[in-house]
Length: 342
Ligand SMILES: Cc1cc2nc3c(=O)[nH]c(=O)nc-3n(C[C@H](O)[C@H](O)[C@H](O)COP(=O)(O)OP(=O)(O)OC[C@H]3O[C@@H](n4cnc5c(N)ncnc54)[C@H](O)[C@@H]3O)c2cc1C
Image (cartoon, rainbow, N blue to C red; front, side, top):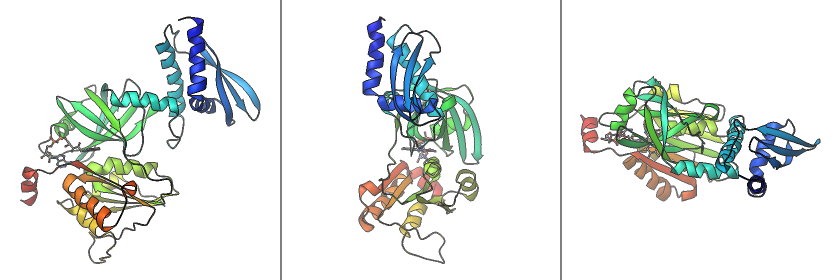
């Protein structure tokens, strides 16, 4: 790699990703940075000039090891960005360089390693994974495809810890499911493949209220949405899970109310949501949930129930697709229906 290549690195980052350099600068200074640019890149370090209200200062960022290739330097620079991200509040949006890296990583299947397993309640288990490639989170209802022992299914990332590149998922334990069975007995050190990482939860900027509902499969998404929603937005969660599971997974706050309907029989979710605007005081499965013009509705649960709720919200309540994000997470088959009716 010659001097021209090294100049090319700083030119590229200064012109294509000034927001990422500013983000990095803000992690280095106590003052808010007005601008930042790379003034020097070598095989061993880079110098970032940061301008604040106090004047300009140059910060030397030393690489972990001497780098002989552009890929190596790219990895070091992104390491700085990852560490800055780990120290930033979860609301801070991803920068342009992080988006590019995340897009590449999300689509690419990669190995993750089981780092822990704990029972949340008799029907729900939390599995913690380490992502050796560095986990970049998308927030919201972020989910990924998890493959193990020849089977695969989608799971929601409940939370992540960027500093140690770990993330947690919550798996519903149910009969007849290879992935559920795998999660029930997963051991620390086991390797899995993760990929197809995506997010759909996208409340419009003028959202004032969020309604998040679902069954146990949607709990991780609902819990994450609760923990990431700004206190300026009120949130109503409606979940059809048992009371123990709900109390161990969802935390109400001043602006978040959690309604637990311990009815997990088929159709429960729809019975709950069908009663959104009908107040049936005597019937606890029909809570009154306000859906105003700036209410964003998120739902996740059994596919046929979610289809009923989606069509109710769209057709009967007139919600546009921008305000309504309802997903079928699993499909009840005939065997389940027979088991449930017995
Ligand atoms: C975007 C997305 C995010 C998801 N997030 C989560 C999550 O965070 N946690 C989670 O547990 N699931 C989540 N799911 C659902 C999960 O992918 C399915 O439950 C999947 O079917 C499990 O695979 P399996 O191999 O265990 O069972 P499968 O082989 O797919 O199914 C076997 C049998 O189990 C039944 N079954 C499947 N899922 C359930 C269930 N949840 N409850 C009762 N019976 C079931 C089926 O009807 C079938 O009879 C998500 C799905 C999607 C699409």
